[in-house]
Image (tube, rainbow, N blue to C red; front, side):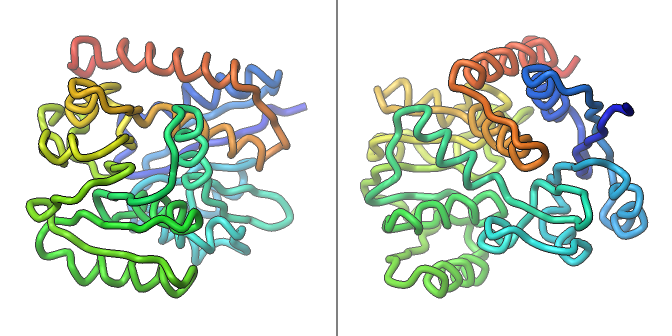
Length: 285
């Protein structure tokens, strides 16, 4: 029997951790499969789509999470809700899913962090949508922290949340205007990501007014955002757990896999160690 073939597509694809994580997930289930990474420029997506459909499934990252939608036969409820696709199954039909919301909510549970009350979400990109819809499902009050000039895009996202859920209290605040107290603050921006690791999307003073924080960034493992939270005794966790959990959900979609907490913990640890090898001393090797 031929090996099953999977991939992740994006542009630029760079040092993605997806091949390492997915190969480990396949190994746990005794599945013989290849998992590659494909750098596909936005203007090449349509012509490469036929080749992608020769795979058994694939993952989708920036900048294709929304542009891939028009090429698919169907969208799962998760992708319809988030308006973005990060996992595709290939069979009689080519179906798009979104595992980001699942990965986020499960990662919070994994870290012992609640999703309730007053939530601050930094950013209004694709990841922020998944976080925002997860918070709205829990009936949270949501504040979106934004850069000046992004008000229209933020308002459109708030309107969409209210149209889908109704009765959700939403606010928009530029980063320098954020002064409230929050049950949870989430960084869904690239601020603090390698190589610009000295930056934090929120100031230490703002972080100190949060009961918990979660950073979707996984490289570095401890961002400045998380360092400031730890310094002040605030419960926190980083994005490697979400990355592994949303990948595990993709395997459930592709072939019905199940993973226990010990298996997930081991892969999170191994992926964190692999990241340190790749970026030894903070420098790309």
